[in-house]
Length: 203
Ligand code: HEC
Image (cartoon, rainbow, N blue to C red; front, side):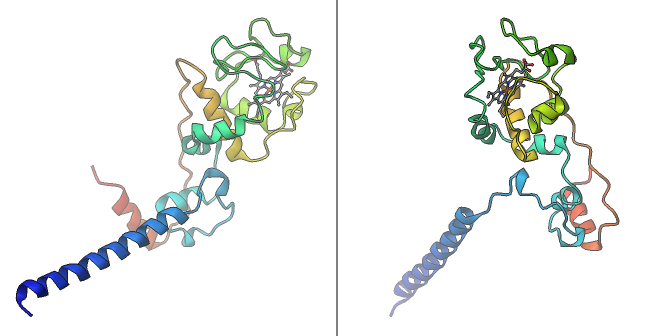
């Protein structure tokens, strides 16, 4: 066997290894679980968390701002299927059973032209802030007794954040999302502190 042939065999072996590694990476990618907002465990020991983000987020139920920061318009569109029976969302769209939702985030409550709101909605006042939308969509008739929106509500905070993210996109000038206030983490262990040092580049 000459060295040329040996080289070929070595190359073939290397290629096989590379292909196997590639496949491995691919299956990992395919089977990666959905770590969307709704998948956050509510009680997890800080010590078990493997990354800084997990250590911060898993300490308590994520706040609305955190969920909004993670939410996607795509997921919102899935949730919005439940709303479409009653609401249009395009600019100038028709009022249906419910009012058109163009520019709804930040809009004064109950003010879409040509829609006849319940007295409850008319009496509420104020703008549709992120917090109010979240509370209304969780349980419409609890947030606003006698609203005529006959909808049971979205139980999952992640679903609400997603649909609110989509509502926010129904605008030419979407309102800023609220800033995430990082909660204090109690005495993270040494390992996590090291990660913080690695993940946050010194400036
Ligand atoms: C069965 C019909 C129905 C469904 C389903 C429904 N809505 Fe409504 N919605 C209404 C009606 C009716 C009103 C007007 C309420 C009032 O006047 O009290 C309303 C009002 C609203 C408002 C306030 C609008 C404004 O101009 O102040 C928002 C925001 C809203 N809906 C969002 C949603 C979202 C998001 C969903 C889906 C998660 C949804 N709705 C599902 C019927 C519905």
